[in-house]
Image (cartoon, rainbow, N blue to C red; front, side):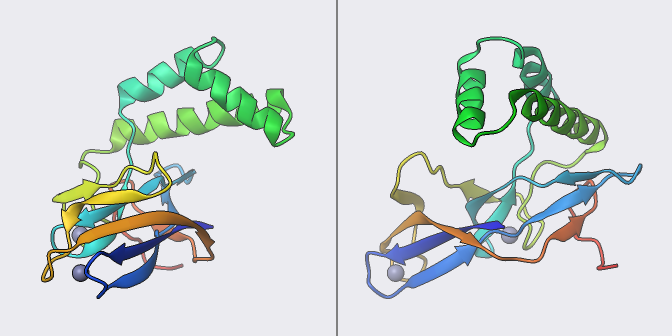
Length: 170
Ligand SMILES: [Zn+2]
Ligand SMILES: [Zn+2]
């Protein structure tokens, strides 16, 4: 499932839905690591899916925090409880996922990029609030672009090289 967003422009000339691309990296040993993405504004493509790559330091900190009462970890545990997940299994999955991301971060060289064009000139949207004014003017009309999360869309999962480039379908 891919995150779906709804955008419109204060100039009343633009309204659209945009679903993020969804997929996973295939690392050399065959492990598949789910790609994390966020919606952003690419300088050449406009609305676009942007890779999210935690740094090696962030991932090591995640592993170090898992058995602590760090605030983010408390939120994660509360989320597991809300979903009725077994905490031991959920923790094991979080550790395995973080270790896979750590292995990926050690071989990954390029910075995160726009999945549509490979460019690194983009602005990321932050979705802390329900409705977000985007940090860009609508090109051509100059109106304010506003967006919000609008649920999920079914999208085929794509396979990516560890450097974030699309692999041919097998
Ligand atoms: Zn507009
Ligand atoms: Zn782009």
